[in-house]
Length: 311
Image (cartoon, rainbow, N blue to C red; front, side):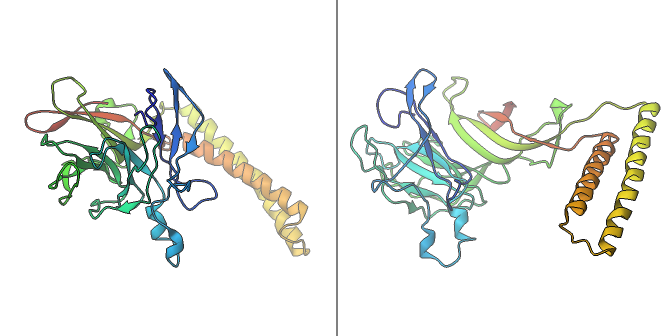
């Protein structure tokens, strides 16, 4: 999107949280040309303050309220139909916040946030506003912590939206893990983030959905000789640890403190042996530990419903 109206595409990026802050601030990477961007700078409001969905100073304790300030997910859109780009921002919780742009052409100035009355049915509010039902106003779509897409139909006007209760648009199975060696078994997963666009040029809005997935790699089977060699090495590590543990016990009986240099040295050796043994133990399993990753899925809208086409 062209945030500052200079004819170049810019990038807005939210984040989980910002170091030394209770909030996840929103960053702007200003476009400088085709695929060229300036360094990220935090977006500020009309008072030159960093964007924060919720003022934690107004409440005692911030554990629950802080969920409104972190995991920011923003959508730049002309929310009120006045011709400039405003911000609608989601969070770790189920709330959405509206930042009205009160600036002049090419000089955005954001007012203090207003919490929208409608709540997402699940946490990780991830807003995307688009005319989904093709009636001339903007509707509110959102990803969720458990994946899929929900939407709230605008029953107000283009300039003054009124949000209906959220309904499920796409439900995903949210598997705990997916096998990496079987593409047919991969499915859309959790923490969905969405974008609506006419992907295939047929005049219907389709959906791109990003997720956060755990993939379970499968490793090659080992021969009996390889298994025997691994088990022998694990036994060697265990035997090497015994005299070290006895030495530590003896030092403790003699009054050595837990943070004494000789105790620390033995503990580090035991930790190294334990880690090496654990690595060998995992290598005997049929699968390796699950790896965190994510995919982008394409849902093509048909006359019946949105159907997943590819990833």
